[in-house]
Length: 584
Image 1 (spheres, rainbow, N blue to C red):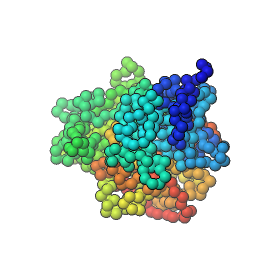
Image 2 (cartoon, rainbow, N blue to C red):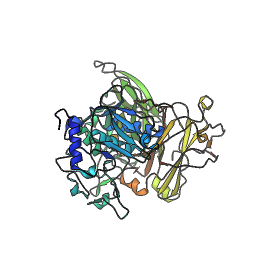
Image 3 (tube, helix red, strand yellow):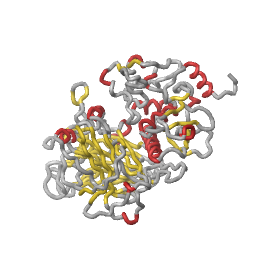
Image 4 (cartoon, rainbow, N blue to C red):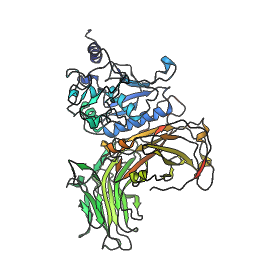
């Protein structure tokens, strides 16, 4: 070979010589990670091609956010960089969008490399799969140690590396059991039968996928993740407790009398017995009105250009409805500032729920800050208090929450789940969602615009707002979650996204619908149902490259909404229904 040949090009030719039949989603199968010169830098530049559909653009941007959350790899629009990824379709060659998703493995050559997002490829897991190829990862089922776990063709130890990570049935890089099948049976058989229906998941990258990527790029940090705490370590994640003598936040395994136990391993058994874990509890029983205690996080520093953070935590309110849980941030002006300025961001005071409830607080710190949880005794008697567990902080915007209590029991009883709470996007569009069950294994979500205060000032039909619904994997650590989501994007050329000017909270239901998200068996494999509850997250993202081919990247979600399921075409039928919003 010429001595001037780029080392990655050399590996490409070697791969072609070694592998004659390549999987359909790989162009020039090369070594995973054996030549570091074939890797991108941790900042990857990319271009979204003009024929990428609006919805697929939004899905790509959401996939980028997951890379930022779980790894040190960041994505930015290309200016004049020599190496970059061009996200395209096969439209120019075939004059139609084909069902083709593929990528090169690793950084190929100067001048840009194509990554194809074809028809039906606009799902977060598929997009992540292709970008992981571009970043240097091979298929999980092609590992040289794969024979210990399943039966399929593999690469040799001289061509690929595992980055010393365990074989992962949940990897988004693993093909499903029927890959390349002619219809006469499965082509991949797992040696552990319980994983036969797990392989090939396309929800999102797994914990081990992210670990392998970070090891490849020699980092152990994240672009947008800031902090996590489940209180299982006595160090309390470097959090500090401040209270008067005799009472305050206490680290507990359980609290007698109010039937509260830890949320982290709620209902989860390991090795045949329930795992012991801890949470923080502030008792308001026997306290005087005004008694309070604070729990302060360690200092974290936002690094992204958009100064937006999402605080997530679970709380259990078992006290009096007048008791308060106040959430503050203490923003520090410089390294010498140890006191900072306190700002109240949210307050929880409500009728006790006696269950673990997910809560989000949108933060906007510009500098290093601490989160302060202040529990305060209100008026009246109490036999409980506030409990706190599974805290996560990330540099993202918070989605809307619909927590459905006792989901499985209601599903078995034929319960009408009805409508979600009302949500309002950051640009004023008001909407809700309805969950319908067509069978014990099939679920439908209908999104609907609701009359709101700003309807007369908004643009109708609603233009280019992406609705995403997510079934939350309730793993306590945000970086280890594998949630399921689907997205659709409103089209201003369709009347189904028209205005809603109806009184008495009537909803225009001639809008998008999602169906058959996950089966009941799928819901049982991860932590989609925890403590009996299913949690749906909703976002509405606006202004996704509106009407242009320009590659616009938002470092944070600018507006909100989200829903669950797969898109279907529906007839244009005008329907109106009364809303009876309930979070139960």
